[in-house]
Image (cartoon, rainbow, N blue to C red):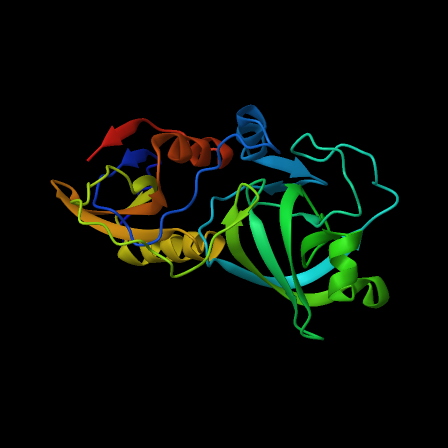
Amino acid sequence: MKKTIFIIGVAILFSGCSQKTPYIPKASKYTSAARHKACMRCYTVLGKKYTPTYVSVGDTMTGISSWYGPNFHGKYTSNGEIYNMYKKTAAHKTWPMDTMVRVTNLQNGKSTIVRINDRGPFVKGRVIDCSYKAGKELGLDKMGIAKVKLEVVGFAGQITQKGTHQKSNKPKKVKLKNFGVQVGAFSNHMSAKKVAKKYNDMYPNNKTIIKSFDTQNGTIYRVWMMGFDTKQQAIEFRDCNGINGSIVRL
């Protein structure tokens, strides 16, 4: 039986433009550039580690929503704002600050749009914590919690209309992006497939691929997690997940 070889490393891969590019948050009237950077670092609460992720318009998520109000009113949120329970904001564990999210209550059909400005809720199964005003529009003030669907509809406090693309006669520029992180290398193909599935399940907004390389000692199957728009994103992912290794460019 061949021994499984596990090599951790990070690789930067270049390709053409992807159809769906995650938005990289910039300084806005709500959140400074420094706060954005801080809020996208991994963090641990109650012994569980969370890794913030970049998202694109149209990304969705389902789960349980709750709401928070008087006990937090007037206190600082994660992006440095003063929490106002009468504004339509929300807390999310991993999505970027100032992401605009349509929240739909799947139990009564009501919906509203909120802006993420805080982290949480740190309760198993819950995906978003709405402000009192947003919660009231969803009927959470009476229900307490409800199953909801989240959909990204914009960034920096602005709603992006899906499907309204302006045509341009200018030639498209190919950008260097789609950076990838090597998360493992194996001599056993099945081991590589298991790791690829693991990362696919953990990070559905990214994509894992397996590339084989022939060596004198046999074939090595390298697992890459793709979908990082910048080198910095790849580095942050590596550091958050404790992946040690050099950065190479293929």
